[in-house]
Picture 1 (cartoon, one colour):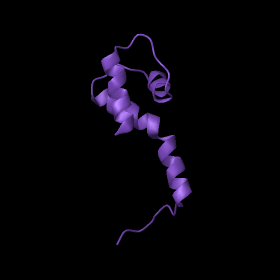
Picture 2: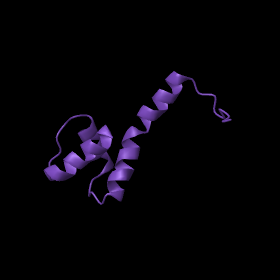
Picture 3: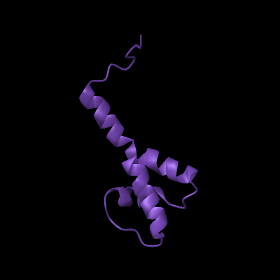
Length: 67
């Protein structure tokens, strides 16, 4: 059916997903036309506040994280 080309274990796959989480959310936020930087995205995902962004944009980033 499907071949496991990379032969990742479950732990390795989880590590890779967590590693690329911020990058994926940042890219999605840009597609949603949210004016945000990569470091601001990481800060929001880590649970800290960011000045200079309106609360709607912060909530959108959090919603992308939760999705």
